[in-house]
Length: 123
Image 1 (cartoon, rainbow, N blue to C red):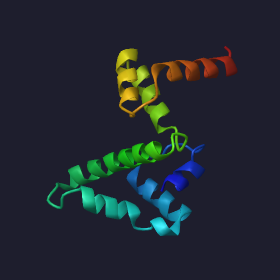
Image 2: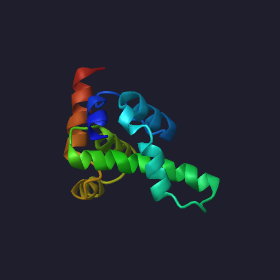
Image 3: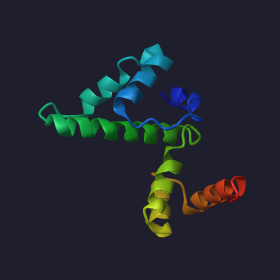
Image 4: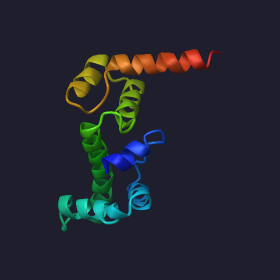
């Protein structure tokens, strides 16, 4: 799975579970049942349909994080999460704490990325 996400690293992060599953199947036939198997393992059978749907979204995030552990350049999920958090008003200390936990990039990375975009697109 990590190699599939690495080849797709310049594409947008896919957070929709159905699209994520489709992308895995199309890119590597060996991963045809991977997402369904992960869902079957992690989601209890007695969950409500709504909770199962929400849990599938969480599994996509977990898989991106797991792939990022194996190869930090596999996707931009951590950057996109930190950008969202910064845009939502989360403090730089909180973003850095999440970075230390391996969940997002540092606030300095967010700042550098925003500066790069501003420099590339002057008003």
